[in-house]
Length: 243
Image 1 (cartoon, rainbow, N blue to C red):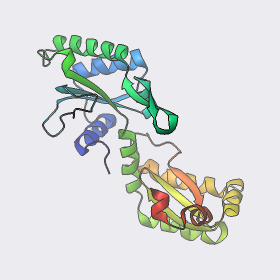
Image 2 (cartoon, rainbow, N blue to C red; image 1 turned 90 degrees about the vertical axis):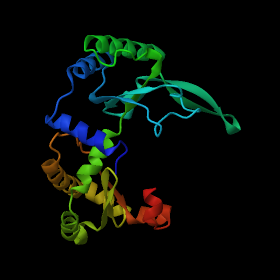
Image 3 (cartoon, helix red, strand yellow; image 1 turned 120 degrees about the vertical axis):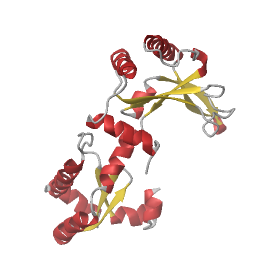
Image 4 (tube, rainbow, N blue to C red; image 1 turned 45 degrees about the vertical axis):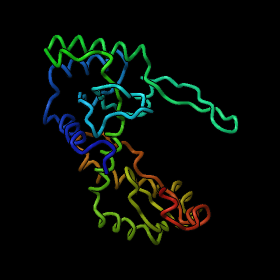
C-alpha cells in the first residue's frame, strides 16, 4: 500500500489529525518553507542514511550522509523546488530530468543550519553532508487508505440499485481511487446527462467523508468508464487496464 514507509505515513497522519505536533525547530522550519516557497508541508523528518538506504554512485544524493525530508502536498509542489535539465534520448528525442534548484536548496539549508544552532540540533552536521528530498506520496497513500475503508457490501449495493436502469457492470478499487464501469459508452454519456453518475459520486463521497477525518479527499477519486472501452482497447483484460 505505502509509497512512503508505514511509520512516516502514520506519523504524518497523526500530525494532520492534531494528535501530535512537530518539534519547535521543525515547526519554525515548516513556517519558513510555506511562506518562502508557497509549499504545503505535512511533515518534516531528518535522518541519517543507513547502509540499507545509502545512495548509490549513480544517485544525485551520492556521498551525502543525511536526508532532510519534506512531505509536500503534490508532485507540482515538489517540481516547484526543482529544475528541468534537458537530456538527449535515443532517436533524437528531447527529454528532461529533474534536479533540485541549487539556489532554493541553498536557502533551505541555510535556514536549517541556522535553526539547528538555535535549537542545539545535531550542530556538527555540515551543509554538504545533507540531501534534501520532497515526498509527495502521502496524499496518494492516504487516498488508498480511505479507499480500503470502503467495504465491499457498499459497492455491491450501488451495483444492485443501478445495474438495471443505469447499466452498471462493475465497480473496482484501483489504488487511490474507484472505477465505476458501465456496460456501454452510450450508457456512460446518458448517465452523465441524467445525473446518475453525479448521484453515485455523491453517495461514495458521503461514505468517504465518514472516514476522511482530515478532509483531504476531493472529488477526483471516482472515475467512470465502460466495459465497451475495456473490451475494445484492452482486450477485455482488467489486468492490462489497471497497469
